[in-house]
Amino acid sequence: MTNPEPAPPPTATDTDTAPAVKSRRGRTILWILAAAVALGLVTGSAFGAGYLVGRPGKEEYKISVYMKKDATQAEKDAVRAALEALAPIEAVTFKTKEEAAADAQEMFRDYPETLEQMTAENLPESFNTTITRRNLTCAEIRPIPALAGVETFFVGRPMPESGDRPAAKIECGT
Image (tube, rainbow, N blue to C red; front, side):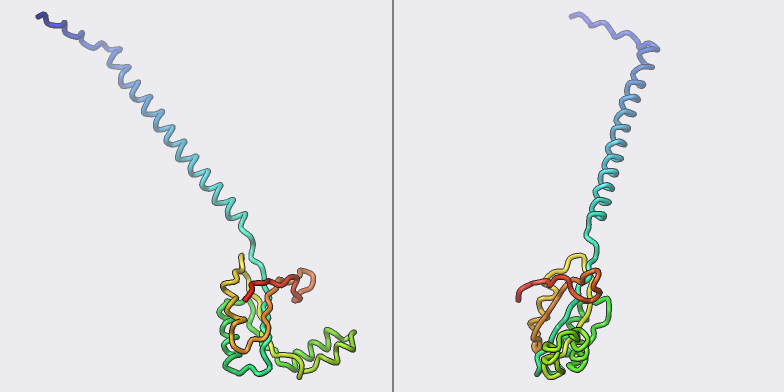
């Protein structure tokens, strides 16, 4: 058997180019990785900013709860507590029958036939408040009309030009 000829010793050019090739390949891989990370960060930031910009703003909702004529103080206290649990932006207010009649006299002053029916004996006591939400869910307000002593429950969004008057009633079904 013959011995294969030994490989010639490396020359200066062979030893100089091998590490350079590896070094260039390594730098290329690093640049590709850096570009991929940067692209991921930019894409993630753009998605996050788009999500935040596209979120609906907070809306105001007016809530009115009209009590039954024979509602007890304990039932009224339970309604007040339920409304306060919604974290309203203004205090929960209670309106007596007399205050409701005075408001009706002002609101319907041009309709004398209607005013005859707007007496303290005919109008209910009520609670009113305002809450803000990005998305109002029925789950958070549905328990209120089911409380003892509640006659009527109303949730609406105010009209911009009308101040307190609601533009639309929110229906959840009970």
